[in-house]
Image (cartoon, rainbow, N blue to C red):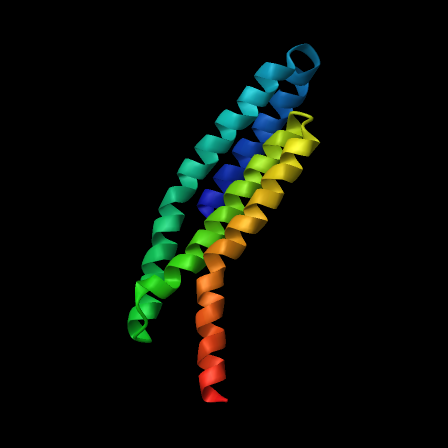
Length: 128
């Protein structure tokens, strides 16, 4: 919770400065947003490690291997990276690039998830 409050405060503070800077120097405003984003993501690294540790424990309890966890985590990563990248592109007034990133993320997530989906369908077909 404290990480979220710190990240939110940093984001609001940075956004206010970026709004002022945007009038005079849009490039610096964009750079400030990118740097703030990096700092926030680094702050979330601790939370990510806790999440991964908990996920491994759940899979250990239920006897599943971490290999089944990997596609899910990759899809979460793809979603996060594409959302952030898309929003940065939109901030830079590059809507077409933002759409391209979102489309690429859709294909990447589908490619990562497909082996898991096929395995699930094979299991269901075997039961029927």
